[in-house]
Image 1: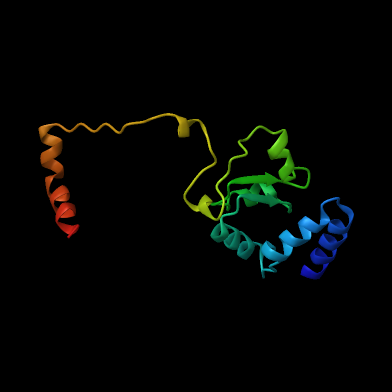
Image 2: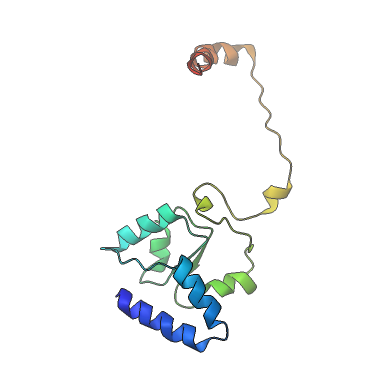
Length: 140
């Protein structure tokens, strides 16, 4: 299957105006991986945590439930990544370099200063005192 994908990429790169740039990018950063199963492909994707993930497969909506780490997910054959970039509305500032494992796309909360506020009463503190002490002592 990777041979078919490689051939399709080559045909496309030969047709586009910036084919030389695309060819260089693919040779430096491209990789074709064939997995034994769809589940393995999703596990690999979750490990890689891509900035963009296109689910062009049967039952893509169902497959989405298994995606844990991606900056943006594009569902189905009629939702190329460019839809998200230019017309669909989600933010184009996405986590890159695998940081989707622990980070989200840029959003409103990134511009709001928040402060955590914690308030215990005497009974609550007494009920948690052993846990607090144990964890505090464990830091050493």
